[in-house]
Length: 258
Image 1 (cartoon, rainbow, N blue to C red):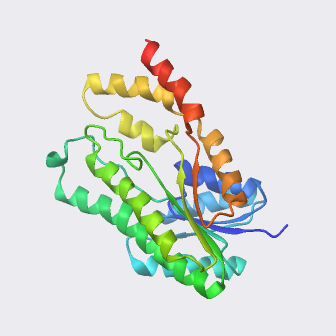
Image 2 (image 1 turned 120 degrees about the horizontal axis):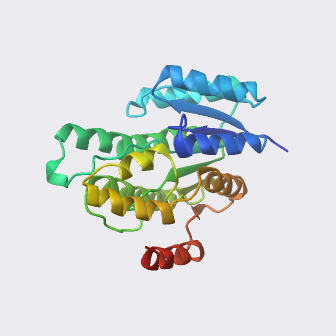
């Protein structure tokens, strides 16, 4: 089997690291990315000790030159890139939009929207030269238009992912390059735990109830996504873990279990 080289931004922890691990378990080659050089090095060495083929680079994905460095790392180590996953993202403080500091608004938009767009552009230019490739962009709460109090900024950024990816897929018609979105649903990660722990005691209690019923274990979700990513052949694909079949029983449980 031809080994795939997969770049995953924001992959030193959470869903990104879980995806990297599951793809490596399936015999692929992965480039780890994060902003903390020590953390990237630690993750790479830990995975190498398990016999996996992995490289890593610490760059700021809000800077265009960072993507050039990621591409160079992948090509230097593995000679190609087959799949590019824009996973990097940051949460917002659990506040009303008008309460947020302008710096937080700028930072979140820079990572969740601008970074994802520039990552997509960098991958597209590389894949057009290479002649093939897949890109997947990570969805999150708000991608489907759902609204929750004190998640306006984050939800808006993830809603943009859905429109952006679909629109780019139309521009790629006939190019031989695939693009799509990954929809993991609620996953038990530090990212989500931190968001759920914020707010008033009443909000925390509500969040905990939702989390306990709707959130899924990391390895279950990333294992599912990894298999679907490798198998995907559609020009545009939406790989969704929390389908209606999985969601409906959880919703009933949320409504009736105290």
